[in-house]
Length: 502
Image (tube, rainbow, N blue to C red; front, side):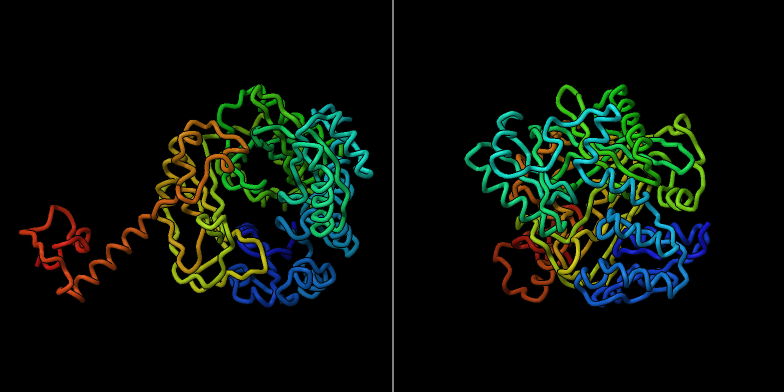
């Protein structure tokens, strides 16, 4: 096993990896940009190295600086987290060439499955169903028109490289094909340095279900259940849960077996996720493999009891998986809410600033993965994810109600967050029934649905009470003989209530 590991990432995932390393007695090295000098992952790691200025291209995406940080600190392996360079096969190869271990799949498997077109070809060969579409890049507008007519509108233009919801456009008619093709190619070029795109059938409002897989270098692959990620906005996941509500057991099993078959065929090693779309009849279609740890991995850990980061380290050091498929028996239900520094009342506009107050919920069946603390700065340079809240229950409704209770306790002051959206979503009748699809948020959510949090309501009451105490003459002339039952603070701001109870 490794003695020291460098974490080529930041935020809550870097904190998550530090914790696993500490439990295993392994030294941790954090890297940070100048903007992240006081970030939580820097404070918690055993060592920390500054790797450059705030822009990611000059720090977290700089392969030479990351390798030099590993060399100078004596790290033997690099954990990429997710995002940044986690699915960059050139980085994985550079780590290997430097004599270090990359805690993720080998670059050859990453190339085979990281490119969506190559992954489609691998899926075909492994007998895994894929969404009907092209198996090669679009070569000009004329070919795109012909392919779209054959597939049938609406079609989805997708970048062959990358992910995270970028490089994707829905085309509903031939008239808009040309402009959307150009837009998608431009976004793919800017985001992934590659403008290669292809077309596939657009499935109207399917469910997004993914399989968590693990494979070792000894020829073993297992799946640790599935996650439903259908609650998403513009292809960005917002809420994830496991098991997927209402999915038939034979469908779960078939998807898991397909994921393992594909991984073994591609020579995949370490943790990964096979993503599928599931239609109303519960027919499923392979989308892609995310060749890394997922943001939503904690829900799988909550129901299986396995620590995926520790298993990643075990496999990367050459170890064999310590269990077989029959040993994996998920228990209960888990839900994750991604807490982002975004304002759901203003079209999820990013919110930046200093965290003035931060209070995490607690209690049975809760887990908090956070990358912030009181006084931490939310900057405009990186992803808006600041924390993840995970709840577990014996069944889905207990997990849902526990999550709602926890969201009411959650306090982040200084920036706007997505918490009000999550509170709305978990109480929506469609979510309560487990009957949402990928179109749920777009069709149902509106900023007017946001209700004040209990914390906001309590603050309003305190402000009203303070105003009444400081300005008693401004109280209404109508007096009450005595306050209603309950706390006098609750009624302090109401007309005639000031001074009613002494």
